Structure formats: C-alpha cells, structure tokens
Amino acid sequence: MGPYQAAFKTKEMIDLGITHVLNVTCKAYTPRKKFFKYLNIDIHDDSKEDAKKHFRATNRFINECLAEGGKLLVQSVEGKSRAPTFILAYMINRDRFKLRDCLLGLRQFVGEVEPNEGFMAQLAQYDLELL
Image (cartoon, rainbow, N blue to C red; front, side, top):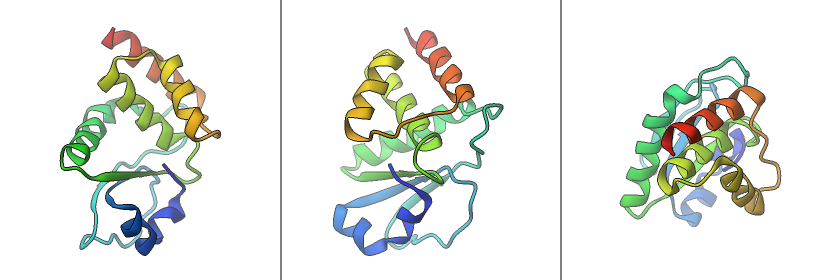
C-alpha cells in the first residue's frame, strides 16, 4: 500500500517483486505494462463515492495476483483512505474477519490507515453482508 508516487519507482517495485498495481488515484500516468499488470479504479476520496461497487473487481484482481504468486501495490494519492479501503474489503471477503479486526491488523503494518467516513460505512455494510 502506498502513495501515488510509489508507482514511479519501477526499479524498487521490481526489486520488491511487485507484479500487479491496483491504482485508485484517479490520476493518469504512463503504466509500465512490460513489468506490471494494472487495474485502474477511478474513485475520489469523497465520502459520497461508491467504493463498494468496485469491491468484486478489486478482490478478483488481488486474488489473481496472489494466485499467480505475485505481489501487489495498492496505491492512492496519500495511501491513507482509498488504498486501505480496498485492502480492508479484500481482507473482509477473504478471511471473513470483522472490519474492526481487519483494521487493527492493517494498522499493525501501516499506522496511517484512515478510510473516510463514507468508505468506513460501506466497509461496515460489506462486513455485515458477508457474515
């Protein structure tokens, strides 16, 4: 998980074994398709945005990455709200853990995990639907 600029560090990404990039920044840049597979989701960090409608596609992309033995970069502008939202949705879906537990687990690795209020509400609803 990281900020927008993380995807510009091609050598570092290759060295880390990154194979897939989930871009939720709404910013265009030249993808390095020779090295990475991309999924671009145009979503703003706005509590009125519908992140939940993208969970199925992003979960599928993350599953594909991991099934291929790859590693994933999930990038948003600052890496605090949108990126963690989609990682949390994947964790809820894959592990069937409660949102609270997923949030605590993710914060052990990245302290600044702060999805906006709207995204948190959607994640809570997603959590309830999967129980």
